[in-house]
Image (cartoon, rainbow, N blue to C red):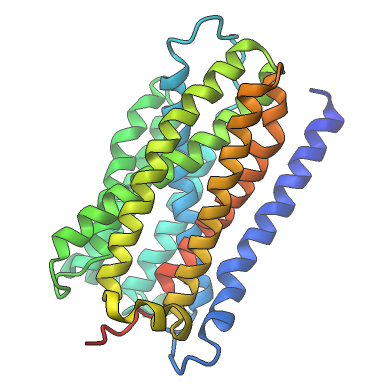
Amino acid sequence: MNDEDGTGRAAALLVLVALGALIPLLGPSAALHGTGEAAAPGVGGLGLLRTVLFAALSVPLGELFVHRLARHLPGVPPQRPRSWAPFACAAGFAAALALASVVAAGDLIPHRLGQIDVGGLYGSRDGELALLEVNAFLVAAVCASSRRPAAQVWPLTLVVVAEALRAHPTTEQSPLAGSGLTLVHLTCAALWAGGLLYAVRLLGLWRGGPAGAALLGRYARVAAVLLAAVTATGVCGALRRMPPATVLDQLTTTAYGRTLLGKAVLVAAVALLALWARIRLRRAASPLTAYVPARAELIALGAVVAVSGLLTALPLPIRWT
């Protein structure tokens, strides 16, 4: 890859990241329009922070996942793209720290340091979970930069567990069941999105060699299982938020339902792009023919991550009876 190609790809990546950031920043006003619901102050910023946190989970977990898939493939080239895990974990640490400051300010956006009660974080469940995420991302960043980057899987697992518990407070009906669904959903989604990102980077680096086709094929088989798990847990989670008799109404009349509907459409588009890439991979002589649909799938998955961040910041739907 020459310098011009590298610069062009970096510029394109920055543009895509900037466009993705607009989803949680501008999405709340569109989702809330006409619903009569009120969102918490700073909902756009909170959605953006959640998006960064989810992306920061996906990148290192995806790298570890694809490294494991490629371990026993025959004829694997020694070249590896530079790991983005240290940068992702650092971004996750910053996002988790900002979210912890919101919790320390009484779930309000702090405008000065005096509003942040750091000691108060130790006195609440949400505060302790926020501190756990901050410390876990910090440890993960250290592990990612060490000689044993695989060790980062343990602190990253703690982040996933903390997110699953945070999403379902003890006042909720059957919170452990909800946390279990979120745990599986978030883990599978992170492996799916982060794994595809690293697989596409490897495929571009290996320039159409047989190892690239074998890796993409192996990833595709596992990704099909991950997609099924994400879909099943997503449907079950939605039905816990919105009882079956109210789903059709709430999908169009609540901000949460509208955003969830948009996410479902994006996931369906991702599935179609994935199917297109796998068909081209099997029928074409060169695996590079699957590179274009795989990159389109990756962009759509990035949009799914951004919408997921927005979804966590919106007010929960009313459980109509």
